[in-house]
Image (cartoon, rainbow, N blue to C red; front, side, top):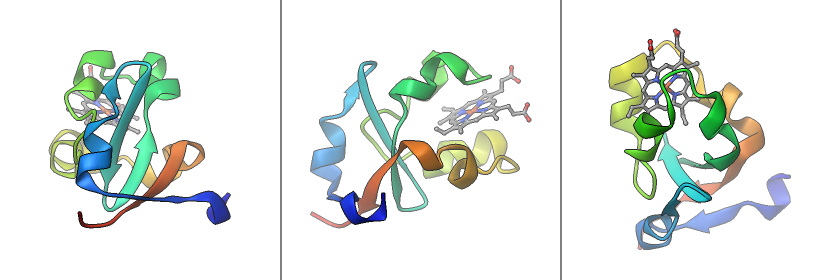
Length: 83
Ligand code: HEM
């Protein structure tokens, strides 16, 4: 729930770059992609390119028409803040 959202810095985000612990940030929101990896139509490999870093640009380049905000809502773990 909204009360348990983390404030995530870029250095914290960087720690979560493994398949079993893969976070990315899209438009300031931080998502745990791990449960979604097997379901991504573009495959695991593409998702892992943004694991541990900001995925906003690549996400927009590949499918600006997809609403990550709606699809990934259940996987949201926090909000990006600066270091
Ligand atoms: C396809 C969701 C991140 C690369 C798709 C599709 C969805 C989706 C719903 C199907 C789109 C369609 O058919 O119109 C997501 C979500 C993401 C995410 C929720 C956020 C975690 C990414 C990232 C990349 C990527 C970061 C690239 C690094 C692709 C590619 C396809 C695709 C290449 C096309 C696959 C194909 O047509 O064979 N994604 N995506 N996705 N995604 Fe993602």
